[in-house]
Image 1 (tube, rainbow, N blue to C red):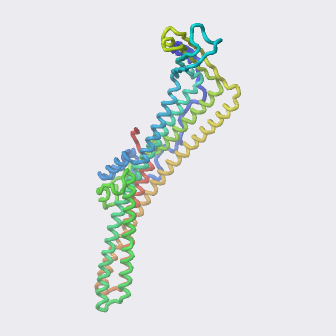
Image 2: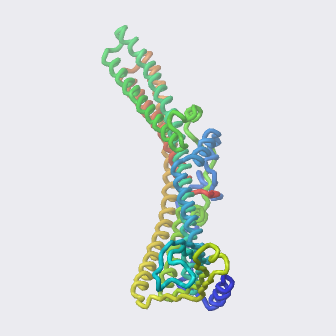
Length: 466
């Protein structure tokens, strides 16, 4: 019977046609393929962007933390589970291409009326029914094929979504590690500033004891010292918060974070220009662009699914079974029954189908607009990140020069104060200026690391998805 069904299906398939539009990848703006407008040859190169960009920092501890995050992060686990669900759905719809087989059996005990009782049989008896049903839908107009195509697009989108989560987790893990290290460096700078002001305070107190200055001068320097001392707990809290984020990102509680993760006391720094590629490479790398393109493919396929409802569905079916008053009758020489034939169903009122087609076409247009928006967002984010990174470097250069000059001025005024050549207000102003520029420079280093991570994140990544 199955052989007959397959032969009939093959004959019908020769006349089959797939309805609905065939998918073609959308065209991106030609200007998007060129070099980035905000790229600065002094700090970036047009070489292909690094897939494992965090390794440019040459920090084995960071490399280990990234590996931990990719293996244990809860957001990644959720994304992988959603990908597995999408793949299961694809396997389910692919199953519609195969013959559907159902086996059944029933046993009942009953009493027949005297009129119904066949000659030679008891009025009370067991009745056993067994049967095997086989049905196969001929995909004459491509409804099943388009459904599989849509499911395949959803799998691709789920895979790209998982890659997007990986990109975000890697960037957030690197940022948390960088923030903890930068906070440690800022903490050391704050403590060094307090130590320097302490030294000036001791000199001022000594001069006050011999009448060379007043208690007001001492109080002013002491107030500056206490202000800078008050910065230390806030920076320490920032560092601890970054370490707590790092623990959560790597799938740990704060108590489980290895001590080595908190040992770095210098801000992450790069010693070479960042390779960024161009716009075409960016759009090929960004997983959110891939996800939007796959969802557009799925939405296009669903137009075909809806269009197929305008046409009849043809199924080939058959059944074979037996009915008897006992197991011996059923599996022995009892009566055998079988059926074979096609089933045609057709909704002769196409209004609903046409409404579904219109809805599917609208969803496809929305998916296309979403894709175009994701492309523009990807380019805009990267251009912004490039500009912010270049400006952050320019700002640090200016702050470095200001800090160096402030350090020279502070050394001169300390020497002049010891010799009584200037008053304490001039010394206080020099100390305050130096403290401000020193703290601003340390913060600028942290902001450069943050801008680098923003740039790397905007460039996307390349992943071997599981």
